Image (tube, rainbow, N blue to C red):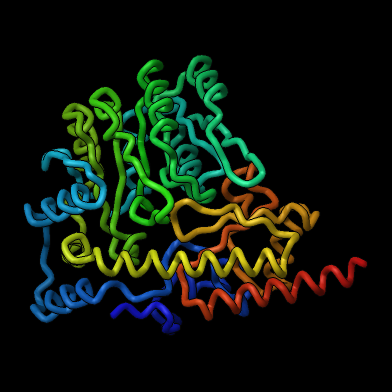
Length: 395
């Protein structure tokens, strides 16, 4: 039986989210509702598999096996209707390191790399830190959702030396699950302008029932041959600390170049616990995931209802996927630094500030709802009290 209601004490577990609040935010009395990990236990089958490995007691060098590859292939086939070849798979310690590796593998210093902001901030960080030129194809905000600006995207491809595009699907932080037609148009532009595509699909299992996720690499052989896809069990099963991800590169030439770069930096294989956990999750995690999505859907409904009834100044940008919800706080009429201070000093909540995802995110907050309902209620009650006080003082 899945228990997502229990509030588990995470202090003193080396948790970035809970143990490093003062280091990151400068304060200790904040409720952490920011970084994308969950306050839930991993599936019991995963825990049991890791316990069994621990009891063996020998932790020498490990390497992923055919069983690991088969587990990934099984998951992709049964959950996502995508059949892949075993040799397309490369394992890395995370999708962000794989993005950095792809930038170094397929581009040169000064080459252009394009992102769609507001977007997961390591995208831009990896481009800049690796000495590449960052281009932005800003998403278009419709007032209640976001869409791709294909006219601007084509102009960017046409007028700049862009070698690589980083796609986020589902999109973090705005929650879009890109439709097949949108991805088809994107693919056509990448093919027409000879742009390689790295598709970060790490949240692809976390899709609300009204929506359907499509892997862009599955659309056609042409786009498949220029796409690198990143997935992981980390977001799906709360295994981020085990640092295991799968990078799928169907094009042999691109795959060989990627593997050559990994060898150059000395990467050999993910750790043994990451391998064991991934196998167990992909082989036995279906039922747990179904329960998780039901719980997240309930939390999302509660969030929407609470804000609609008690915090009309805030607009929920309803996510189609992920457990991260984008909140439009622009009606509070605070600049982004004042909004940040308000959330921390008055509401006593640690959110991910919208501006860290790009200038387009100023005036927004990202809240993580992958927590027991009691934690979500506490956060929303803090927010309500703070806004009530702010409105009284302002009047």
